Image 1 (cartoon, rainbow, N blue to C red):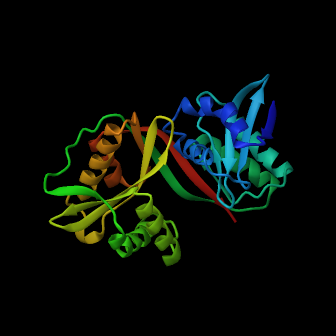
Image 2: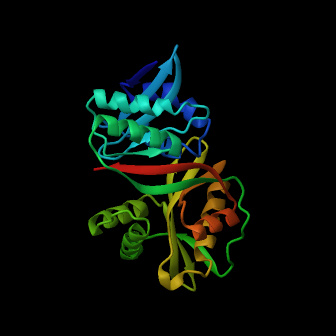
Image 3: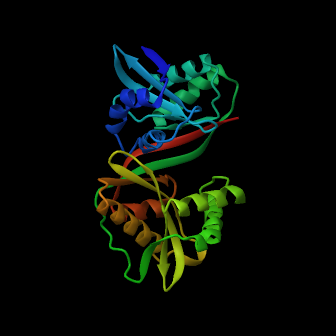
Length: 279
């Protein structure tokens, strides 16, 4: 069994893309990053893989200072994660945390704690959903529109609130930068009712056949009125109409409301993801 880092993104794509595409929605984070690096030069990312007799069996990667990502591969022995943990330890790599399928991540955490005296805590427990067909018609009372420069302060404020709800620290500077990026890239959308923005949703990563959405947020004043459902249904249909074969998204495993909404729209659970952080 050989574990190593690829020397370039081109080499990494040749080695692992076909493997990751077998569960494209579940691996949307790794595939989305790989897609990004096809056109963006980076010297910091670490592209790891595991192979035996010339066949690539597993993949993992990191974009420092973020957590390490473990692939979702059917039939893979959980011991693969243990081997990855040992490999990273021997390479003296920094491991602030790890995320991926629950079984693999938990085995990684157990092995990492044998090598390093750290405390591990669950930061996020998520489900991964995939949609191939939209089952819900957006409300006729509202419209989905691209966010514009004039919406910057609103989106910045909502991103900060979204961060609090999602247990993700979001400073004003970071929120402002993200709002600017989303608006300039034309990926942020607002659901508008009677001329007032009431909910938001962002088109995030792209993979070979799909697109991921994130930052779904409705402020308390407008909750429980179906606005998020309409916004997600509308952007999902838009992406399918543009040629994507499917849409994917992450949800909080412990939030029955959001999970119910996404299932109603047409999203089906295809995987899980847990995030552990070390201290």
